[in-house]
Length: 152
Image (tube, rainbow, N blue to C red; front, side):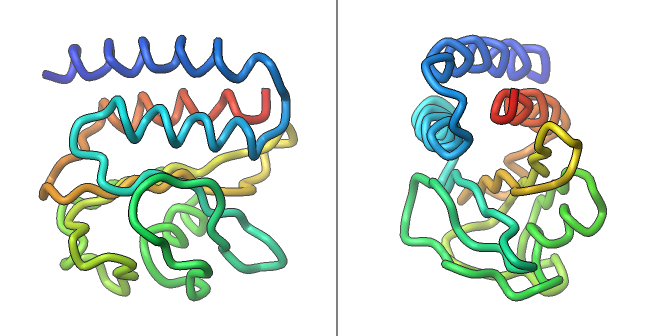
């Protein structure tokens, strides 16, 4: 399964790269990436970005139900990814200490830090699924590669 999953991410990567080549604007690139991922990847319930702005995490481009507009500092999976400086995969969000439930329908989550050209974390890609244990290492690898396109 993992090889098929990586192959799918490679196809999505090529498609996103082609689409976003028209602009270097990161928000436009994020919006395109969120839309494509949300509609191409099975079981993606909420797909979007949160920006670090003035010490806060605020919602950016996304697909799915209405999101939390601002995430409480140092709480939840998004902040865990920022504070650890690495992607975080959670198989069951109900077991994650301090999980922020923007939707009670979300059961698993993956959060990938987004770095600018200077290597600083400026945002995160957050993907939720209704399925438990939806995300595996191939999802982490595929999404980490995809987010590098944003600030290229």
